[in-house]
Image (cartoon, rainbow, N blue to C red; front, side, top):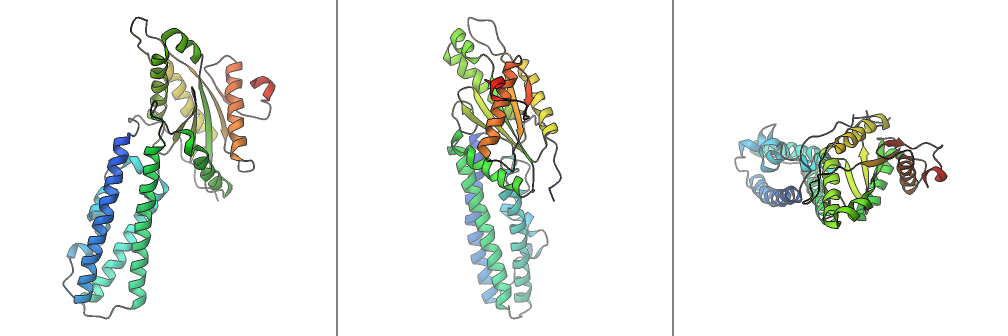
Length: 314
């Protein structure tokens, strides 16, 4: 059965920066190092029947270690929406539970069954795999970011959408994609110059990212076009989000020396990620919808439906 859909609630916090991502990677590197050191000390305690550290026997040991302190800190927003971050908690908690079981047997001078120790090492390996996977994904975030706008580059877009497509096909979640095109952008470049045009692009992208959730993903599709991937939601909730973005954009002033401040608008085309067609077909549908929005007067949101044909969009 599909998971319960979560409303696409707009966020007011600043977009995640490359610095925050690098900090998270550094923490994960340190976590791996600390867990190697901790495992070495644990094995010595088990082999020599030493008195265990009471913190390792506590039910909340997974919260008290350095990794746990970072995991449950509010400042981990950079990875909150990542599925590997969620799975990391389970692996980490279970690893500590198995460790406490081994330490309890050892302190009671009882023999540790091989199967129990193997369960512990299995959970330890699973934990390290989750950390490494999360770290690689964060590194991809840094290397695949459009330098001008801060949005993700198009390099990993299809891979991300295909991952979402698999979840949709398995009925594990729903996903909306939105094509966005800044209206009359050529006139901005022609009137104010490309430097101001670049500022307008960056302003638009930052506005979108400020008003989406941490696990939504904005890609710079090309030029003044962007594509937003909105998982865990339906078309109505996503439309509410996009309308907040669209109307909020109208109020933003772009300042250009020697000219009066000006505003930009954008046209938005939306569609559900369809489990029965290739990802590229869903992208084409969102593209048709955005061009239909332009044909109907620009600065509006259109949801794709089969009545939108190439002739209208063209």
